[in-house]
Length: 267
Image (cartoon, rainbow, N blue to C red; front, side):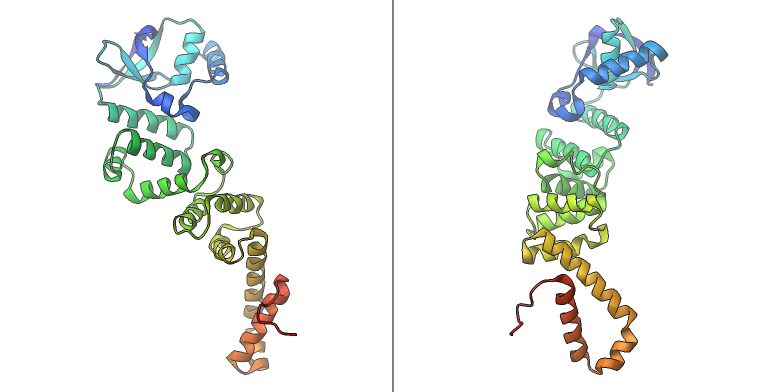
C-alpha cells in the first residue's frame, strides 16, 4: 500500500529520463529558487513520488523542483509517497505522465513523450496505448504533429489550437505543404488573420501559389464571394437565367475581389 514516508534525500536518485527530456525535466536554478522560497514560507505542501530501486535507495518519479528546493534549504529528509517497485518503463510512464499533466500538456508535449517511448524504450504504438491509457488515434495524432514542425519552432506554436496543428500536420504528412510552410500558416493563425475553419482552404491555396499572402487573400475572396452569392441567390438566378452565365459572373467576381490575374484572360 502506498504511504507517505520521511526518507533521506541522500538516498534519492534521478532517473535517466530527466536527462533525455531536457526542456521539461532538468531542474533549473530559477524554479528551484522559487520552490525553496515557497517551502520556507508555507512548508512542503505535497510529497514527492518515489519508487524503490535495486541499490537500496529510491528513484524519483515526480517532484523534481520540490526535491531541489529542499536540497537548497539543506534539508536532510523529505516526505515522499513511496510507490510499489515498478519496472523501468512503468516508472518512466508514471513520471512523465505526472510531469506532463501538471504542466497543461499540448499535442507537442505528448508527441515528444510518445516518441521517447517508441525510440528509447522500443514500445510499439499499441503498447504505448496500453501503458498510458491513451487511444492509438491520439498517439498517432500527437506524433504526427510533433514531427511536422521544426523542433526549434515548438515553443513558438504551443499556443496554436490542437485543431489547427492537426490540420497542418496532415498537410505536411500528405506533402501538400512543407514543415516551414506549416509554421508560417500557424503564425498567421495566431495573428487572427486566418480562422481555424479556413486552414484547409489556405493549405490548398498554398499548394497552388506557394505564397501565403496570396493564399490568405484567395481564401478571403472565396468567403466574400460565397456570402455575396448566398445573399443574392434569388436575384442572381433571375438575372442570369443559366448556371453557365452565373458561373462566369462568380469567376469574374473572385478575380476582381482577390486582385489575382485571371490566367485565361485575353485582352
